[in-house]
Length: 188
Image (cartoon, rainbow, N blue to C red; front, side, top):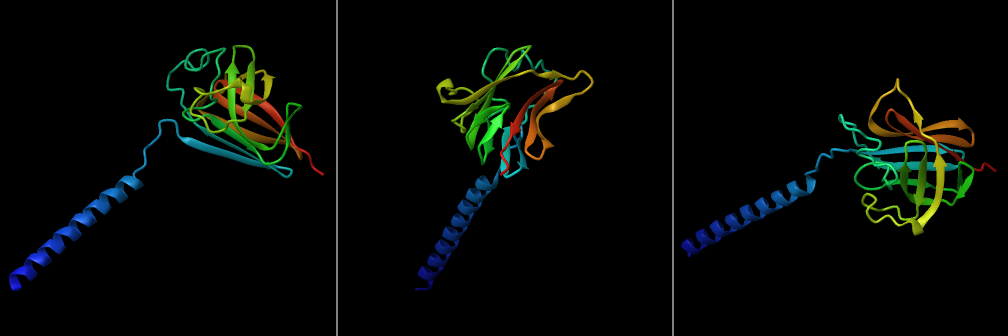
């Protein structure tokens, strides 16, 4: 009887150790995070009663030719890295004078050397621009990029600058280029 009790205790100990080992590996793998080469970022600003949120990934220049190179001209670009950039408005807004309904949008751009087409697409959750479909565009606007030879932005950034109680200027800034557009909201 003593022999069976010892075997039972040894088996119980081994089973417990095995389960702890499995749970430790499972816990470690769930808590392990990958470092992204192009880290995630979120910019948020309230103007009037409207919350504007931009979620994007920040690629770096890293001694590369960006415009017309890494980001080709005349092609749809995700306006960031990894997942498509997302922009959310919790109320209806006007973008450079054109109406856009409240919602969450995939934000894309078609850059050229002289002007850019900025796109607010109804499909917010996309990887890159690989599944982009222009039939889902809610709004397109044309803007002129601003070249700043005395300024350098290594990591892509979005800024939101208040220009009045009911408007802001949103800028995509990367390398020596700034690409602005205006957002205006209604205040009752």
